[in-house]
Image (cartoon, rainbow, N blue to C red; front, side):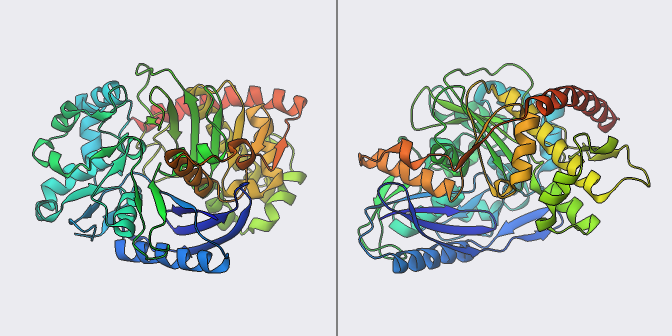
Length: 474
């Protein structure tokens, strides 16, 4: 049995696979987020306890030895730990907004762009640079007490194995890692005012660190690998490794990833380049804030249940009878494929004759246009895989194929955990058939007539978006 561990933001999962990639069992446990005044935090002990619990459950349900385990999890944020990997304070989540004034200042004074030109990382409030700078100004004693500022999976790895603090090139990519040398860029550390905190940055293990489990959740001696984090792990689990191929993760947020061997740090600063285990290979990532959270808001506001969505999409024509939605509902604005902290959602073309179906379809179309924008900015010119919670709606997948104008390789199941196992197998030299492990569940083809209609609709979307961005700046 091969075990993948995916430590998500709101759900911790463990999945067991056989050597062909077939899922044998999955266990999950929710974890809490604490939200107050723009702060979004998590209890590290609760997160680690959930990891141990799901591992106990999944290994108890499937008989046989654990050949190896792969670990992935949410990226960004700051997880301050002592020398044993124990929390110094609550973890600051990637969703945290406390450092937004710092990012605004860096946008205004050119620091933001300088960092992007050096590392390919467009900072946002919940990434480690702004969060560490905020903590240095407001909670210096927490930093004084910490041994390392880790990422989520790194904390779990240290406690499962007893290994020293370490991260990998994927998590380190935002915002300090030089993607060419695969080491920290000390000038970026200096630009963010963190030179005196440089020792908190975890050593980068390249390739990913390995160790043996100490017996909590996994049998003692189980081989485990630390990384990559969830976005590149999903790319591996969906078979996205060839340059030009892409992945769209349709979750709470949209994440668009395109594999590339070219590093282009020109153009509008947005997204990031995620370094992978293969030097010279990156994922051009556009992790947008827009996603299923936008649809969830519309559903709750209109009283539509999730199980009604497919029927409403089938009943409402393309174009939603003139209703249009710019789906930028996040309070922090948008971060990909552009950075616009004050951008907000807009609904137009609504009248007393508009139906719930019109609003739902217009929202799904708007999210599809946003995805197309991200994928184009990331350089997609090959095959496209799709995973995430949104794939559970067949009608939405057909709509997405039409809006994007290309076939969708739908990959279901625990894609991140699957990718973590494949990364671990590569690290340990265990031969697994990656093609079999990443075979799509189905391929959804676009309808040519609807795809042509949506190509024109996408051009109109870009015009409305440009106008909305101009208003957001006034």
